[in-house]
Length: 315
Image (cartoon, rainbow, N blue to C red; front, side, top):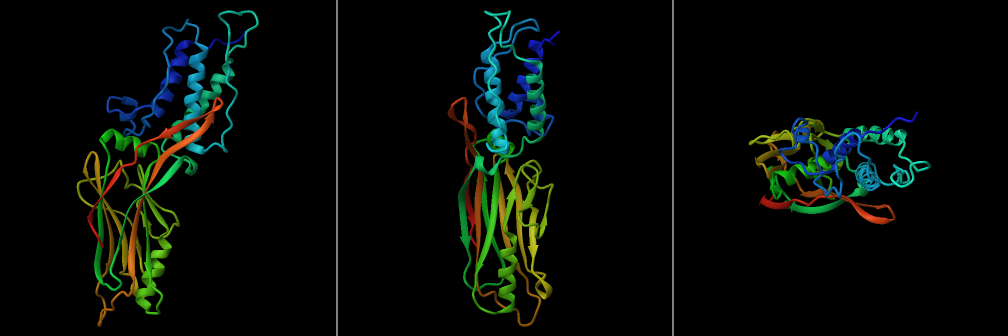
């Protein structure tokens, strides 16, 4: 005998999907119990709870549930890595004898997928995000000592900040040096900065794209204090090991983060050589902003507002 899929089971599944796709509100206890790491801040569509376990489940409710599933999964893994199943639309209310019934296996598949989506909830596929330039700072062509590029990233409120990082948003750092000469110290700086690639400040970690330098896996949006913490650094080589490129992060308040990108060239020789090349610090935001073809139309998967950049101090 076929297994009935109770409305209460549908409601539980619907709630799991809503917790990922919906708002990251402080009253959302699922979010709160997981460091507020649930909630992309997206519109959920006309999802209606079935009032009791004996209710028939609306075909439209199933369809809207699966549309939300597709939005989440396409956002997380891209459109090429996930193939949508055909929409299952029953007509039991008018054709009980030979209807196209929703099968339990179909629901089990969505339940399994929901678990995968919960595990991947902080991920955005590169094809589902846009890279937005936030700001840049360039030093003089000769310098030594310490240079600092300080700036603030501001969200409209604490919830917008949570939703940006929950959806896989990142603040991205990159750096370079303009130098064509042969001075050993300047060449070491140029090579050291070229090795950095990009550094992404994300929900719970700061990760370097090339595996070079020291990344701090525990320093991210959900672990910040009102003082600077080192999120990443890379050092020079050999006798120039004291030279260091460092990214610091601190929280000003619930909606404002401050970062310091530091180029440190300490005095450790006589005479102390001057660095003969301008260094540049570039800041970008990886902003979830995706689309996909769903049910025959192009739809937004997940889209969150970009934060704003405010310069505090140039190099």
